[in-house]
Amino acid sequence: MSVAVAEPQNAARTRCMLCGQDDAWHTHLSRVLDYLTGEYFDIDRCESCGLMITRPMPTEAQIERYYPPRYRNNRHAFTGSMRVALRARAIESFFPNGFRGRLLDVGCGDGSFVMEMRRRGWDVCATELDPATVHRLQEQGVDARQSQGAFEHPFREPFDAVTCWHVMEHVDRPLQVAEWVHTQLKPAGLFQATVPNAQSLQARLFKKQWLHLDVPRHRYHFCPSTFESLLRRARLEPVGRTMFAWEYDWFGAIQSALNEVCGTPNWLFERLTRADVGPSTTTERSHPLDGAVSCLLAGPIALASLPAMLIARLFGDGATLTITARPAK
Image (cartoon, rainbow, N blue to C red; front, side, top):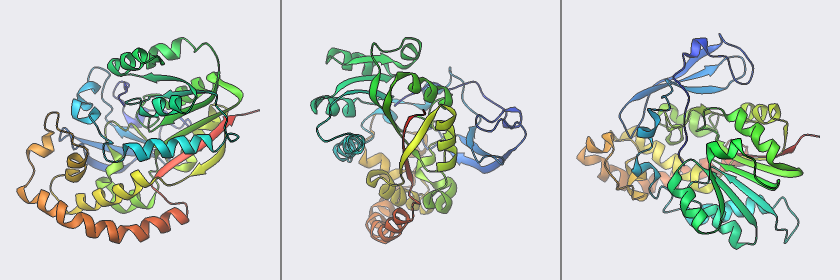
């Protein structure tokens, strides 16, 4: 998906969105590389509540170049079908068997989840910043709107479910998005949102080499406590939590480990997603051996990381955080 961002902010002068502190920011990770542009960013942590932010934040005029065509193009090619099926099962598990209602997908990406839910019998709507995606969905009969316009004009009827898959870490005001979602839900409606878990074993182990940092497109970096705090501030009460997703956790471990030994970050990820619409800065400068090393080590790393990943899942320390919430009474 693509999103807009706010003006650059000096963390020392930024009031924390969650706890209100304006002098508790400290550098958590310095000089984190954006693999698409070769630029470096810091991640700062609020010592009062634990919320983490990316600095500097690109302006709205600058952000488009951090979402080049290669970033939007077929990023989930090799896990797309599984990802959609798992998400559909995750949301439907909270409803009676056979229930079909109204569903809104916020930041719908390529729209594949929305179309799958419509195929299953749901009345679907969507928001997305990318106008081409919105137009394509509209042509297929979906009530799709560009993100800004949707926030200004509510949909005609409230929803039984609102989903927000890997969106909240991108937006400039995630609390306001959650508050808007509250206004779109039925009193017994369901909100399900997924973000990378910045407190996970993977994040702690790989630090700035972790695949799912993805600066500066990920403006916020959440852990369970900060994400639940955000939802509660929006009057959304968490009723369920999972800490694992096959398609993100396992490959996150593989690619992050490869990033530790290769000079070119995310080399394998770029090849598997067939992101061939223009080169990235780091790919242009890749070492000839990075491809061979990635191909040779990917299999052994996958086998070696599987037990650790499953143990992390067992102990609720996975790399993918999904929280389900309902409007607070």
